[in-house]
Amino acid sequence: MNSDILKNYCKEKLGLDLVGICGVNYYYDLENIIKNRIKNNYLTGMEESIIENRVNPKNILETAKSIIVIAFPYYIGEFEESNLSKYCISNDYHIVTKNIMQKICDFLSSKINNFEYKYYSDTGPLVDRYLAYLSGIGYFGINNNIITDKYGSYVFLGYIINNFNFEKDTPLNKTCLKCGKCIISCPSSSILGNFEMNPKRCLSYLTQKKEELTEEEKTLIKDNKKVFGCDICQEVCPHNKNIEKTSIKEFTENILTRLELEEISNISNKEFKRRYLDKAFSWRGKKIINRNLEIINGKISEGEQDE
Image (cartoon, rainbow, N blue to C red; front, top):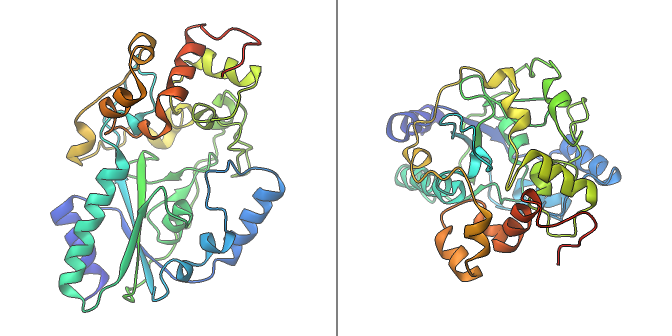
């Protein structure tokens, strides 16, 4: 069994053409980056709290020998009237990507004796963008996104930690164009210009923030009319021009581009979960979505607290 067989299966059977392999090491350089982020108060609280779990794959799977990293493209086009980020307008990527990774693992289990694995999409302890860089499937943009030549930065990332010693790929010796458009266009100035960002200022984070919003944060949501997520830095990025659209069927179906206050405010929490169970924004619950819609529609006035 070699990595070519794996990659051919992913491409021919699943339509995935961005698959790479990285090694299982203690990522000391990443550890330094994380510690620097902690020092600068750049963590949001959504990250894995134990640093070693983020930099040592063997903490996750003791028998690990390699990590398969996959980019799942999701771009289907532009929607001018959308108030949702592109990543959550179709079927929940957590479900879609994990279903696909299970197929990969089932295939490998049929070829490799005693194949052991654990897979994650977005919610795993390791830093998926760092793994994507190590495995050569993408390179960093100034906005901290992983960029691919074919699909731009509109990709979800998943990884499979496993106990087979696949041949490792090498990082791409490139970065984004460094044009600075994302820095200039970011409404909250969260992109710092040195391939770092303050995620606690990012508008996407603010739309998901459970704690009380400041007046400045409320204004950012209202002025940019973002109910959940933000694509501004991606939309202005030249690497996202003339990119290919996804071939993953699940990301072209069940499209919802807008949420309206009248609908959300008139349904129960239970109905919200039932109605939007298959959407990536549903995990945050009705309360946060309704708050953002009230801010956008002027229902929460200056100085009013979100209770």
